[in-house]
Image (cartoon, rainbow over all chains, first blue to last red; front, side, top):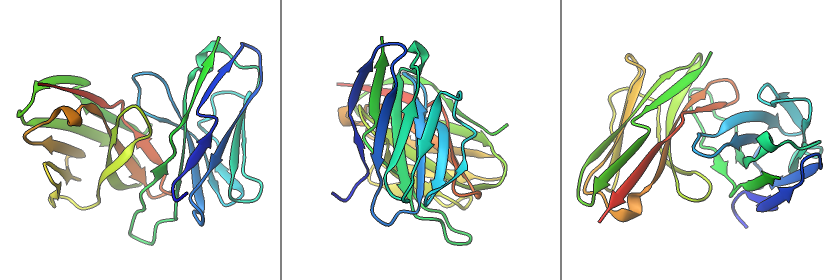
Length: 117
Length: 111
């Protein structure tokens, strides 16, 4: 497909379980972003990749959160020992890098809704 | 700390009304201001604003940016029930296009 895809679309985990969320960005997009969106809130930045390099992980809420993009395309967000406060929609977005003085739109995937019980 | 604020946080209007959604930002290394519409899925792109005073229009929607006052508005005229959604404002930074989102304005348009 032409857009960003994410899987699974829905995930229910018991507290303490590990989960892995997958993002397939638009082919050729260098930049990849992960966001966490709690109910009634705007998306909060988690981490950013440029190709395979994770250049910013300042938004990851704890060391239980880990993201990778080993070949510069597909990315996985892993949450270890899930807690109830991890329940949210996890959005992935991809974009091309902006030209000097310009800006590029981020294209969002449908998100993964994680519920921790 | 980078911050994007939106008001109102929620709004209920009748079909046919005109609404104005507000967004203010305090962001270092600002590049552009983005508006997204979010229904029960991923945000969909509406506008990107990089210059002050130039109105962007798409059908019944329009938006303008004031880089001096660090402010943007999104106008929707002749609202329809299909306009019901959360409208997200976001500031894009020059550093790798990092985007800071506001909390969103939840708009409900009732018949």
